[in-house]
Image (cartoon, rainbow, N blue to C red; front, side, top):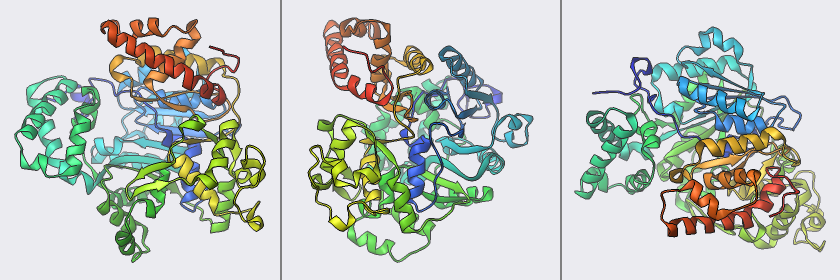
Length: 526
């Protein structure tokens, strides 16, 4: 069996870079809300707060840099095993002039005991996206020791990983893809492509172990759409291993970390996840880990995104609601684009227009704190009273604060902000332009990226194609046809025409939003 990357890689995919990306759940302002919904105190994320952010397994550093550029008062540290990742991250930081981000090449197996660890400040927030599933036991133990040393008391950990039991039906598929691929090719992306082709052939041959699981069929449909570079990192690492939530929690307990909730906010509302009969089973248990196992038995939750706190401080219901009422939100789409019925595991969840309609209208105009949205006069476009009982019109603590945060932020239709959006700083514009120049490719147009912003503290999530358009706006007058030729020079004239049409729609629909969020100069006019 041939493993790429050389002996130093130790079975980890290191010969090709991991694809850049950004996940909104990793923003501290979002994790703060996840903590509050879990009934524990969050962290201060204001624009002048000197927050320390640690990204373990940072890849090429785009997510860390988007947060650093958006928050000049922060200290952002990215750590990665692959020297090519660190070289790329440092180069991008230098090109954009982002001076508050540092990138360290290190093996997480022994970083905690290394002199390099002294260069890492005590962290308020630590991020571990996917890596737990891709490294071996030695590296996982090293991660726990590092978190014990570097995550401050009260600090937040975001960790995502391939979850059991959902992945149980896909264990054979992953093993086949990896074993076949490593025998058919040398470079890891080609191994992934070759292994997937074997899986595809058996799938079409009605192999029972590939056909009987709805989760596996869904997983394969997605795999057939992903580029080989993504599949290599997802499936080819020799240490690949999905985990039960309780086992991850048990390992992290060595660093005094306790699970407090899910980063996808809607997952913190059990009635949105489970049917009536399953909820009755869930209610038999008070113990958190067992309740999460019951949920995982009922869901095809392939990826868990968990939030842990190192020494959580518990809040009572009134304290939680009062803290949620201080959240600053802004609508992340145009008002007419709001989706009022969203898909959830338990079926469909309706965002009730009578209550949320004025709230959405208010958030479309300007950022608002949730406590303001609970006052009828502040929510209504015309100032008319909304259907809220008068005795609860302006409470100090209102349980509906959690409903507003959960439904709007949880559905991705509102973003939590740390401050009010400002005109974009030069390093914000330079990072957005440099990232588009480096990463935008025709095959990556749907990749999850973000625009760095000024003032709001949260990068604005967007697909790669929107990052490309926003960056092009700094280079001269908009020309969708010319952009289409530059991005896809080998495409047919008809394909380029359709792409130009997509660019034109993005210009019409997204430019006002980017201006509102501090990602594009407000004076910019098409």
